[in-house]
Length: 246
Image 1 (cartoon, one colour):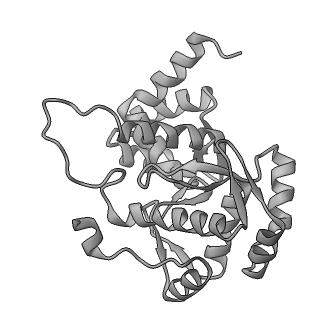
Image 2 (cartoon, rainbow, N blue to C red):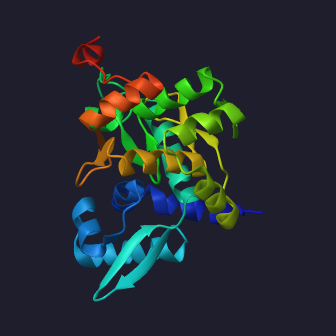
């Protein structure tokens, strides 16, 4: 059972602005050096090293050495899920009365991040929500409060798109990971699909050239081939600029 003291320590670690910035930039699943994370947090290398040591000691980060460099990444999908949950709560928190009300959409300011981004190893943003809702509507996936099920019809449909469901199932078994679960999207306020199946959907999009990562960002761009494939499979179309202005 988690003690109150342990809970408080973890919350304090995440609550520091510099450490929060480092954790946020690792939400796309990359492994980064201390120098890269220092730049992301706007702190000196020495300060960053101290923060990273604390995060690794608490089990929030793992560190791998390659040549002369040490690379830091989130320790698990559970850590990413915790951070995404904090972001969702923060986006709906009571505003500071000293600040004027904001008219911008909830979630990240960057429209590209709201449209499609990585959430550790799965897809998030409006694209991911559209995909989830399409899969539910066609009876391919059943989503509950805390878990989800891929139906036989869904298995046939996703295999037809090239999703490697066998590898996903093996990954889930070997890592003790949930195969399919809903994840509340903090910019859309509706669930997208996480777990091993969510990771497989992202991997398929990248492997088939439907999606490409945007360098230096969690944003994911939909390629021209992806526009066609995702429209046919899920009814997805990019948001019109007028939608944000509405």
